[in-house]
Image 1 (spheres, rainbow, N blue to C red):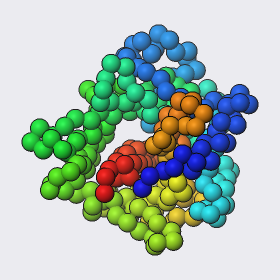
Image 2 (cartoon, rainbow, N blue to C red):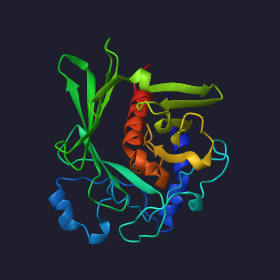
Image 3 (tube, rainbow, N blue to C red):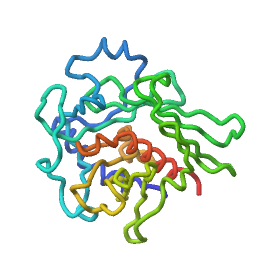
Length: 273
């Protein structure tokens, strides 16, 4: 499916309005090393770790629309978690996908207000199947970090696979279609425990993630949104904002699965049919 420029601009319009009013908006930033980032970052820009459950102080325009959810997510209903600078503030965290300097096949994921990346994403070719590519997700800013997972997809007779925690599964059994033609969803079922399954709903170009396979439209189960960059240049010639992943406090515990499932969905969307 191709996202038209007009559709993406409509979704991004509110974000541009926020930017004109002085709010932080997603951007593209290059990285070379963790040491360089520490030298240029202030203490308040420390990376958000899975343990501290830190949060951004910036907001995002990509909240679930009324056509998908039954109501807006209430901050009062969400569990609290600590922020590196304001321990009692409960807010979503906006993660930005940014390219790595001097690398043609990798990018990092960092929070919008922090400089130290949380994830590193690299892509390499399968030497036996040159038309198939392996995406490796690790923690930190290099491929040498702890591996979160990897998946392989491509134009090949071999079925796509996903590996997490040393367990390999076929993608088509982990990411399955749900809902109906009027309300299309994708269900992420890597874990055997149904309480850890996720659902993705679509409202082009934004995707919305919920906890459970029967919770789409339930704001109390809302976890995250993923907003990809447009497929065509902007009419005004300005550079397109980077892809963003907005994660609500309830989604922090599922961040690994949210990230990997979003990457696979985007690969499916962009792959030729």
